[in-house]
Image 1 (tube, rainbow, N blue to C red):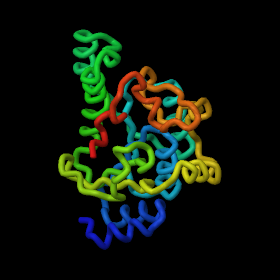
Image 2: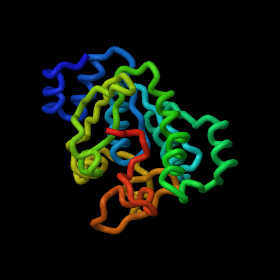
Image 3: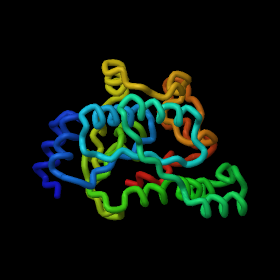
Image 4: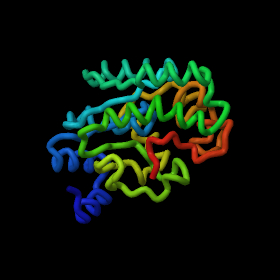
Length: 230
């Protein structure tokens, strides 16, 4: 369990120190879900460089950029590991595409959320089964929906602790870590893609725009897919 004292300590520790603390407090069942974005590459480096007992996994939605697969391969080579990959259920994807169309997510928010649920949420829930702690790369300045997220919280729905080691980091701090530690990143970031999701649902943003403005740009929403609902 995580006590109030533990939570207060995590606020004081560095992200790397916090990951080490969590890995010592929980002897198993710690998982990290990476989307291969810049924040997640920072955490991946901290985990794998220090050989922490934390399982790293990613979700392959079937609609990712080629650059995602290239970076995943580079990670596995650099850290001499094999990141676990989880896919959506074939039946769910086939039913959705055959009934609504290959790009039905453009037609309504409901269709888009259903696509995210099939391709992301269900595989995530499967990957989190049995976990005690779920580590994420969320930062508070990424969107309004994330502004008040604590560094660690109990997720009642998923019945585990959700630890956000970079929640208080600025984007500048992320970039500084990447540069100082020579961390590999998606080549898309150099082309204006800051928050990168599925290829048909992501576009480059202009200078000064919110980092998630390029996600589901055709709709007005909280720019969330359902993985992080609170």
